[in-house]
Every structure is written in structure tokens, then in C-alpha cells.
Length: 455
Image 1 (spheres, rainbow, N blue to C red):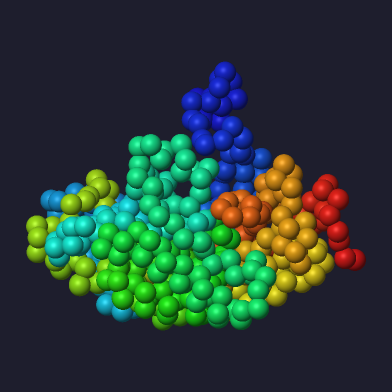
Image 2: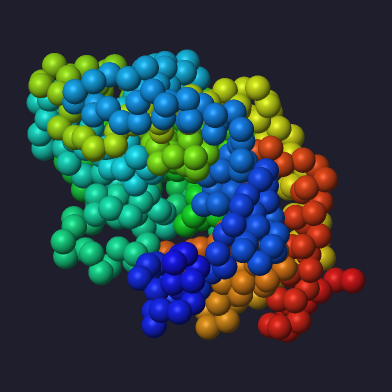
């Protein structure tokens, strides 16, 4: 009996997800498109979960994985080295800035961030700074779904249930400078938001603070939020002043997604530890990585080694996918294509914003773009929460064969947003296709919710 048959004839499916919503059964995928079992085509305007950077069905990646499967499918990292993991670590180190050349492999984004947090703490212990344990995050933010990563995530809906069995960490406001109504310049606002980190450090006690974790460009919780240029240098200055590690969560923004290899590369940032995943294997295998400097890793190794590990860390087939993905990023010029096509996408989204006044704050870099939905864009007044406008937008787009990404921003003013993040192979013509469907979707949303449209 096939999986499809069992779903149709059973009293209920055995497989469950985090919602009760049913989805179509996927059949095949190629490039930026997927098809379901009925033959209906969907444009992958979200790159899956913003991870399918090199597109679906890339034969070079698939063939590299098959070749590795023919040799060895699994070798436990505590028993063997494997060539693919060694090669991928070298290839990554060659692309990363500022001495981030010590690489540790895991199976996904939450694992990668968790590993960063644990490495930071073990570094503190190894260097005689045992009192440092607090890791400051931002509100809102999303860093993963494990207990450790939820502790630094700013989203009460996800975290509140688990607070009693976790240890929530201090949070500072994310730099939503576009919502501010003051006489400061954008750069002055960036400094003001960065200074909130110093205020939190002093409030908590500098001797107890271990690290600050941030996405250089906001992901799911803030829909491609780009801080002012001034924010980054000031954050680094504050971390240095108090001896605090700076952790960049590049799970979504890494591997060319924003038009640079890392999101932080737009500002020549100098993080101490970086989390990578998603685009690292482009969805072909579960894979993530921690990258750190020798200054951090050296004392930990000297003290007896990293107290951390996963069965599938450094899996040879997953790492073969990673090596092949990096090869395709180079061969196809995908970092450059993301930058160029990102500007095309930005222009088209801004044009839609002019046509649909309830769409505003188009933002992001490369093929990592977001915008917000407002009742009054000038006053930054959110739409009534009961409308669930962002979820309705996603559903209407899906009905029309376009997949986009959305998550309601929580923390401070609640607002609705959406993201358009197609694979990095996307062409100008395909962006036109995405925008045409998105325009039809916004027309339908406007009619349904009685929102203004400029014709």
C-alpha cells in the first residue's frame, strides 16, 4: 500500500506535523518549481524554508551524493575521519572571513546554534571565566527550536511553554529603526539600538555575560530586517569592551543568500563564532556547521575537547552534498546572481508597494527580501490581529501556485510580514513570474479584507 493510499483510507494519518493543516503530496521538483501528485506546479518563492539555494534537482549535487553512497554512507566521527568532511571544512574556511577557520559539523540550524552556545560556555570555563554564562539575544528573534536555542529566542509564543524546563536569557530590542518617530538620523538610531546591548550588559553584570547572538540580517522573526550600518561596528566595540563573544546566526543568511557569502560580509563584521546551515547543503541532506576562531577553539581543545557531539555530525553523504553545493555556488556565480537579481526583486516589490499601499517597508539584501502589511503604513499601524493577514496572504498565494514565507512578528508592536526568497538560480524572467502571481494574490487579499489598491 502506498503512502498516498494509506492517508486516503486510514481513519487518520500516522504522520503528524505542528499544525492540523493538510498539504498536497509532493511528487517532483526541478529548478525553482515543485509539482504535486495531481500535476499542479508551484513556484518555490521561499526556497523551501529559505534553504534550497542552488535549486531543486541539481544533478551535480545528486551525483556527488550517489558517488559517496557507493563508497561509504556512514562513518562515526568519533571513530573515523572522512574525506568529504575534511574537504568541506577546508572549502568553508577558505570562504569565511576573520580567521573563522575551525569548523564543526552538525545536522541542522538549531543544532548549529546550540553548538555555538555550548562552545562559548566551554571557552569561558577553559579560560577561567566560569562566572560568564548569560547569552543575550534580541526581541523578536528566532534561533532554533531546541531548549538551548529557545532560551535566546525572542518569541513568547514559541518559548513560554518551555520556560519552566529551560533557562530564558536576557533580550534586547531588535533594531526596528523604521518604526521610530524621532529626530535622529538612521545611523544615530543604529547606535541607540546597539547601546541597548551595553545597557543590558551593565544591568546583568558584565562579569556574568558570556555572549551576544544576532542575525546580521533578520530572518523568520523580523522578515529580512537590515540594521543601519552604524549598528554593527558599535556592537563589536561593546563586545570587545566587556570581553563578550559575538555570535552570528547565519543559518538563513549564509552561503550567498544575501548577495555576499555571509550576511555579515556586507559590513565586514568580525564575529567570534558563526552558525551555518540551510543553504550549506541546499536541502539535499541535513547539514549544519559551527565556524569559530582558533582563539575560541584552542583553549577548549587544550582543556580536553569539545563536550558535544551528534551521531550524524560530519556525515560523509551530507558533507558530499555540502562540497558539491559550494562547487555549484561558484560554478553558477550564485553569490553574484543573488546580488543582481535581488535588486531586480527589490524594485518589483517596491512597485507592488506603490500599487498596494498596505504593503510597506520593503527590505533585505540579495534574494532575501521581506515587507510588512499595515493598516496605516505612515503611522505603522498594524492590521487587526484577528484578520491573520499574513497567513491569509500565504494561503492565497499557495492557491495560485506561489510559495512565499511568513511569520507574524512578535515582541513590541505585533505586525504581519512576508518574505520572498527564491533559489539563487532565479532569473529575471522568473522574478517577473513570481511578482505577477504575488500581485494577483495581493489583489485578492485587498478585496477580502477591504484594503486600498491604487489602479
